[in-house]
Image (cartoon, rainbow, N blue to C red):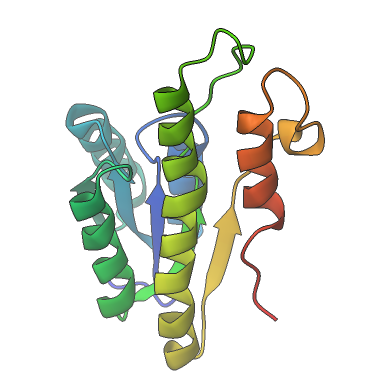
Length: 168
């Protein structure tokens, strides 16, 4: 089934808000490209949505902290002319105090919450402009408003999600 609404690409789609967005967008008539690390959970979400809505659902197993995987998702956004929406939901979190936090984990959080999101936005926007339609939803956190809590890295990364790349 082809959708007049187009296709929504959703990151972090195997559970939580990502799976919820997938379900709601499918019910509103969008076909889906679901992106997440967990192959089995992704397949379960896709099957459930296909069975309940009849929408076309494609899954992409990808770790957005892995450069090759991230570039593959960027290419999908650039080249799949049916994609009209990007939902940036993938994210990782840690709220350990600075003295107990692992700096490598903090760097990984920045890679997912900031770098991957930025690269996907930059892949989507020119394609959406060329298609003369497109929507980007970046899911942040209430901690974006209180970035100094805990060690600050998580809140700061989510503040970037909330206030980062924006189109004019």
